[in-house]
Length: 230
Image 1 (tube, rainbow, N blue to C red):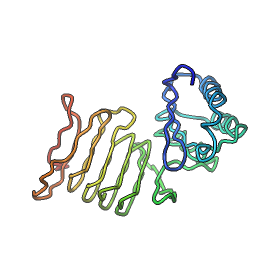
Image 2: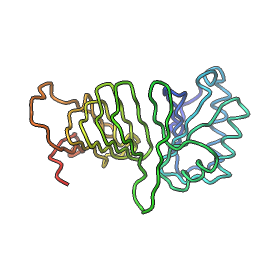
Image 3: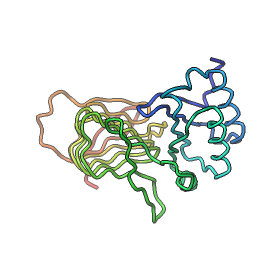
């Protein structure tokens, strides 16, 4: 490996690799060139199951010719770009027009793509209208809304907020890209682990209490939970 490039973050996920481009102010061509160099210097790593990449560009608006240049660079190196996660409507439109998925939802290795539409200005979100059972993972660059329970062993990772219209018992990470203003709320908030940006907490072992809607957020350097009354 060469010197670390903090603008390009790569981590393994069940479906291959998740590539996050953090440098929103950098020229797109420069980012593509730096990524190409990193791949060329680590060809063994970017092979096999690791040759499938999902791209997270956060709020950055990516135009068709820019995304096409990245996909072409990856294709030449035997790497498949299959998903683009972003809170930008421009980027989401670009990705969909190129036949790419715009959210990551995985269960037992099978991928699903919930329909995401936005008729009014607001925060991009994925709606999951079912209970998330153990072993299921939902990832999205925007917010995640679950109409159902989140069972122990299930995981949600969101760049924005996490809203659960049911019991939250699994592991959740809101503001995963560093947004400390993100929140997690549920009709019954008792997660195995709860993270907001870089903060982390767990539920008390004694959960013998009357369930009530609660919202968790960061205040004065720690995660607190209050009654969620709208």
